[in-house]
Amino acid sequence: MTLDEVLSIFRESGAILEGHFVLTSGLHSPIFLQKARVFMHAGRTERLCQALAHRVREEVDGRIDYVVGPAIGGLIPAYETSRHLGVPAIWVERESGVFRLRRFDVEKGARVVVIEDIVTTGLSIRETVQCLRKLAINVVAAGCIIDRSAGKADVGVPLIALAEYEVPAYPPDLIPPELAKIPAVKPGSRTI
Image (cartoon, rainbow, N blue to C red; front, side):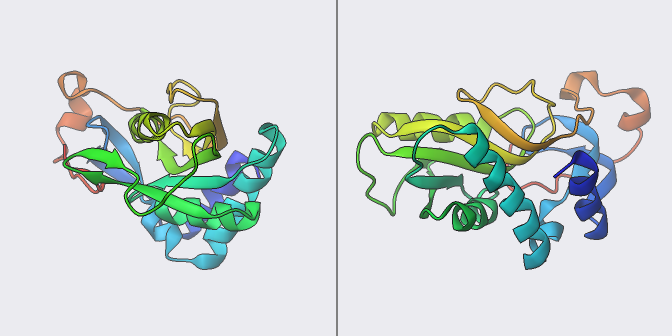
C-alpha cells in the first residue's frame, strides 16, 4: 500500500485535521491525524492492517508469537494486524503512568512485534519495548500505520511503517508565529 493509498483512507474518513494541535508527544502541529475516525470503519481498518501485516511478514525473519499494542491507541491496529498475522493480540496498559503487561502471561523469550497506530516521537513504543524486555520478552520489531517522523523516531527496535508521512511538529517553545495565533486543541489520548 502506498502513502497516497493510506492518506486516501484517512481523507475518506475525515481523519486529516488542520488547525493547531498539541500531540500526545507534547509537540505542536498544524496537522492532526485523527485515527479514531478511520478505526470507526472496520473495512478501512482491515485494509490498512492487512497491508501492515504483509509488510511485517516481509521484514521479520522467523516466527512471531504475539502482537502487542500499547493501550489505548495501539489496541485496534494491534488486534487487526494480529488477525492477519494469525497470532494472538495482547496489550500493555498504564498503571501509575508506566506500561505494564497486566492481563497476560507470556513466556520468556517469546517473539513479539509491537503495533502502534501513529508514531511521532516513538515514546509509546519505546515504553512498551522497555516493559516487555523487563519480562525477558524478545521484541523483534515494531510496526505502525503512519510514521509522522518519516523514519527519524528511534523506537529501540526496527520500525516497520505502512507509510511515512512527515508532518511538521514543534516543541512548545518553538511554535511558528502563524501557528501560535490559532488556539491549540489537544485531541490525543495521553495527558501531558
